[in-house]
Amino acid sequence: MQFDPHVRIVVDPGIRMPIEKFHPNVQSDVRRAYLLRGPTQLIGHNFPRKCVGSDWRQFHPKWFREHDWLEYSVSKDAAYCFYCYLFRQEADHEKFGHMVFTKTGFTDFKHAYRGLPSHVGGVSSCHNKARLCAKDFKNQRASITHRIDANTKTAQMFYEVRLTVALDVASFLIAQGHAFHGNDESATSLNKGNFLEMIDWYQNRNEDVRVAFDELCPNNAHMTSPKIQQDITRSYAEEVTEVIKEEIGDSYFSVLIDISIAEQMVVLVRLVFVS
Image (cartoon, rainbow, N blue to C red; front, side, top):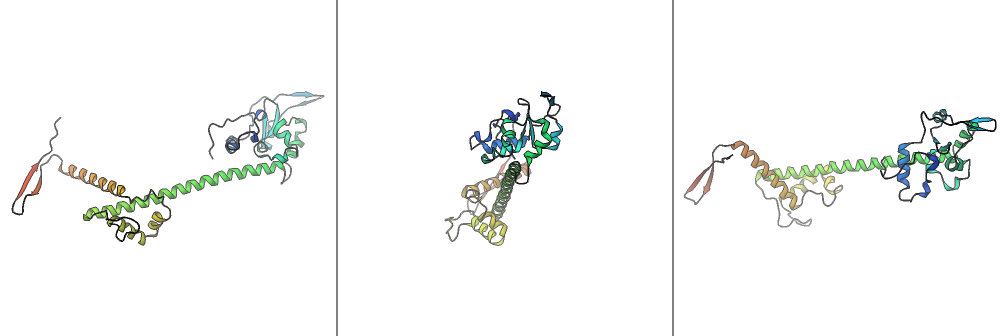
């Protein structure tokens, strides 16, 4: 799951801007960024003690282990709900202390043993609805990412099939000294030339090749255009030239030239490198 790196994360839940205040186009990115970071649960922080009446009150870090959704705001010395901040519903703002755990902050630490479980509530509580929304959001993003990745791999695989077929056909035609192009290479032509006709022959006998060319192929990635054919033959020619040059090295070689039916001329050539 990825997010826009320009989204600014506010660590302190007490001073965050509400999700609904963000532009609708970036709300998903904001949620994704916070989900990747997780709730603000301070470790080693010196939580302040406050005297209220005759009682001393203080946030206890052990509550983080008991409630994975719990966040702490240093600026407000208050507790907040991570999932309710991200996925609360407008209609639920006034229910079950929703405003306390999303906006004003929970500070009744003396009764936290009762207040924190009360916020969680039952299966269909506002908190559990928000938590379920977070889970669905994560699964949705993971599913989309998986589908994109799968489609990308499939497209690459069929591209390799098309390229391999094109190279195989070109290799055969070059080895036999046959022409590639036809006079009419359109889809309705009765004879599109050796290259395209052999590819059609290949498709009719191999289902994977047919699918790669017909069903899962962008219009500009067939690997059969005249330019592609020329590029393939040029590449083969360059490879053959390199092999010949390596075999000859600095030796002499001859070129036989037909001048007429009666006579022939032989020219000896040697390539000399001058440093």
